[in-house]
Length: 235
Ligand SMILES: [Zn+2]
Image 1 (cartoon, rainbow, N blue to C red):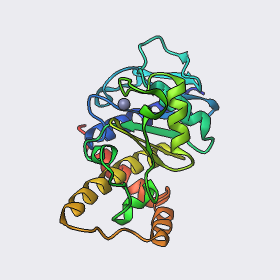
Image 2 (image 1 turned 120 degrees about the horizontal axis):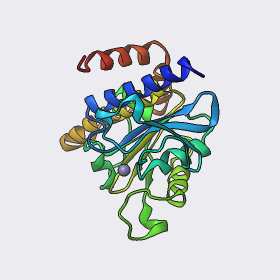
Image 3 (image 1 turned 90 degrees about the vertical axis):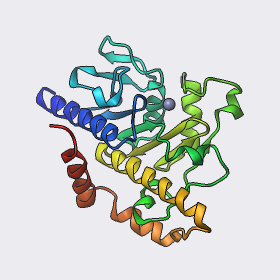
Image 4 (image 1 turned 60 degrees about the vertical axis):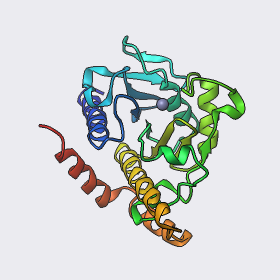
């Protein structure tokens, strides 16, 4: 689709840079975008740290994680994106990360629930997927479609899932929303961990979660945050 594909890839590169700059992604982790012109395909960088990703690194895959365009080395965990896109026709973008702020909720009995309004975008309680249950002792990396499909099932229809002893995934109906969910969920995890150390936190009520999530589902607030995060990047 000529220039429109260029614009799409440029936006995905920007998402990589933003998530790295906000420290959700570091040496590892990745963000993908479903091909708007082909729901059976998605764009994702070659195996490279997200803060370094450029347009020429972006490859295209089908929903079994086979390479459609590009001849570079893909991420081992490309299958995560393939499985979530395959399971969820509503999802346009997926983020997988190991942000240390969310990890305590992937290694302890504490549940990740919203304690401030923006945390509502990650759902009422983030489910936890434990690869040990189906796959036993592994490297914890999601390395094949069987593991990735299991992870996608655990995620269900929600915006996020925690990977026990590993990290998290966020999914949304747009690239900007997926970035927004990833950053807000991380901020909520940080706040919740601090609050738990002080006593019983004050969680959002189910009605507050519904209202706050609806208020921050795309539109002006998400555009405003995206513009802010983009402005913080090195020129
Ligand atoms: Zn990972």
